[in-house]
Length: 200
Image (cartoon, rainbow, N blue to C red; front, side):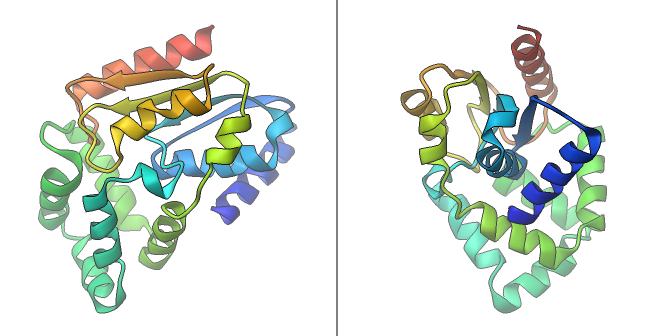
C-alpha cells in the first residue's frame, strides 16, 4: 500500500495537480485511502468502491480464503492455476464474483491477472486486508461517496453501510441485485452513482 501511495503522490506531483479527487475499487480503494491519509489537504473528494477500510470490513469466509491461498506451498499452486482460464473463472464464479459477469470485463480481468506478478499481488493483498483507516475516515469531513454491491462476497456490506457513523457527510450507495463481479446491473448503477456524485 505504501508503495502504491508513494507512486500516486509522485505521479500527482509530476502532473502538477493541486487539489484533486481520488478514488479506487476494492484494494484500489485501500490504496486511495493510504494516499489520501498522506496528502489529506490536497484531496477534495473521495470515491471508495467496495472499500476494504479495515480488517473488520472483510467477510470471515473471504479472510479464510486469503489466509489459505496465500500461505506457503498452497500459494505456489494457486499462482500457477490462476493462469488457467477455466480454473480462474470457476474460482471467481463460485467463491468471489457470482454469476452473470460481463464477458468483456471477465476477459480484461483475466488478462490483468495473467500479467500480474504473483508475489507482488500476494503481498499487496496481504498488506491491503490488514490496514485500518477508521481513524482517518472518522476525521474526514470533505465529500465522500462509498459504493458497494448488496451481494458482495468479499466485504461485509453492513460494515460499509455503517461508515455513515464515521462519516456522516458521506453518501453510501448500496447497489441491489449485484455482487463483486461486474454484471451489467452493477456497471450501470455504479456509473450512475459515480457520475452523479462527481457532477455535483
